[in-house]
Image 1 (cartoon, helix red, strand yellow):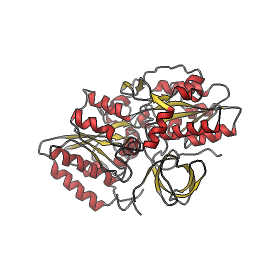
Image 2: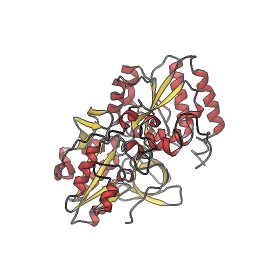
Image 3: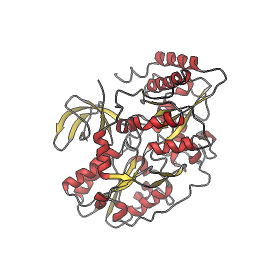
Image 4: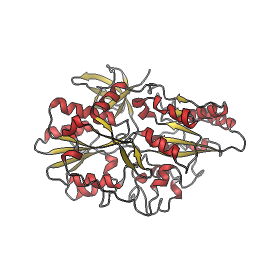
Length: 377
Length: 70
């Protein structure tokens, strides 16, 4: 099968592994951050750490949109969902994220009208079918998801649909990467750039990382060989003393991104002055809000939203995990009080969260699980 | 419409993961029917990409965001 055989070949993985090991300078340690939660998932699903020499450590970045949403925004959404005549619609992962008083699923079980959807387009259908209700879409995600929300708003406007709105929590990846680069906690040698975010924004926005911070970036695909090739490309750059942005995932990532999608986002949303990220705090211009010209679809203007700030549970160390300072198993509650069934922190909720990836694939520490590359689940 | 459920081991909606599908036929209003490769067809938006029957596209939250280069 194309893209399965082609990108999961064990022999090629072993050859790449040997080439990567051959580029390691004796005595030097390398730390690469995979920005995207999808990459974290692939790395643990296929046991890719076992293909890397001891000298290379992969640090998991903040690229899981569910994981970085602060608890206060969940509480705001719950408040909104409890408003009369509102039908709240949300992606599946978001349904399980705990707020101060339970999750969307808990609220749904108590009778609040919260419905799970696959896309904002499904929310639009619900709005058409329920003209006497006000349908709110919980917009969440990076630039991968923002185009879908943007197009849905444009469609709602074209249809003249008056009962659809968005509670906008879309975030942008580049300011978060910059915040990590500015953080004194962590010294990284390079980045695996997020694959599907880059189909929209392209590779150009990462150029400052190479230019101003002297770190190489390789935009990577999601198959096991994509990731190993990208790590190899980072190692080649370091060994040659180069520092550039390269595109390993050129089969879907155009260098300039998807300009039509960017235009749709620009028509419907603009940057917030600042937004709070779990673990990273407030980051300037790191999230999107609904544009003034679409105020009639902005749930934050249409409804009362308390704007609460809630501290994370004391035991939860998602913040440190999201910054890559702690490995998931180093968190005090990992795998004991906090599991995918009863998550305390967001990193355990989404399958893309680093903690869930470690837990689901039995990674309680490095080098424990046999290699599974080439096998289909 | 029945309530959707999450299938598989990664969420294709809220994460930074998109799935590759093949366009079967174009519909009005920038929509298209696609073959998911798993024996099912689905309706998605292709308003943001140049799509024609047979084009492989990358879809996220039912919005095509990129064309897969052959």
